[in-house]
Amino acid sequence: MQEFHDNVRRLVEFPHHLKHVIAGLTDAQLQFKPANEWSIIENIGHLIDIDELYVGRVDRILAEERPEFPRFEPDPIVAAKGYQQMNGHALLEQFIATRQATIDGLSTIEPDELNRAGMHAVYGEMTLRRLVEQLANHDQKHLVQIHETLAAYAARA
Ligand code: NI
Image (cartoon, rainbow, N blue to C red; front, side, top):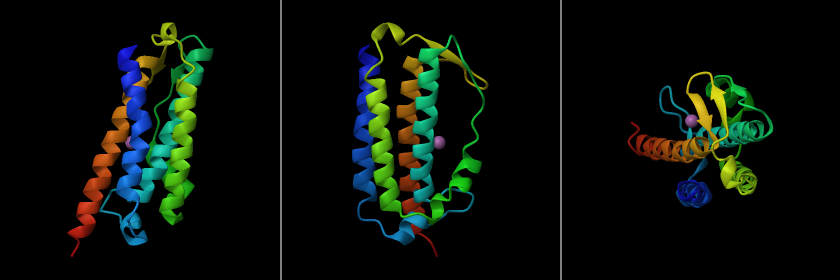
């Protein structure tokens, strides 16, 4: 249970880190797209998509016996939602609200439910315990990508 709580705490803390990074950025920085990469706005939108995806998985794991999860393709969703045309700071506030809802949902999980699982088409068995760890790791992956995008913006010709 301790590991689960540690990962939930990582999920709680992440929006504060992200807000700190995003706070002073201009639209030009937020919209800058390195070749074949998402902009910072698109990264924020994708974080919303993934929270919604994971909350859906959590709900199904709690309600069904070993539900099956299809492979998720992030790029078409990011493009279809048109994040690139949105206001980055408003989108960040939307992510913060989405993440709060995620945390509220996770707070109702009982210790004996942590080993309940679904079956992912690519990753195989996903217990609730592992799913929450993956979500916290996913945050960090995109934080790194956001920092790399900022560095690429600063270094652009
Ligand atoms: Ni991702």
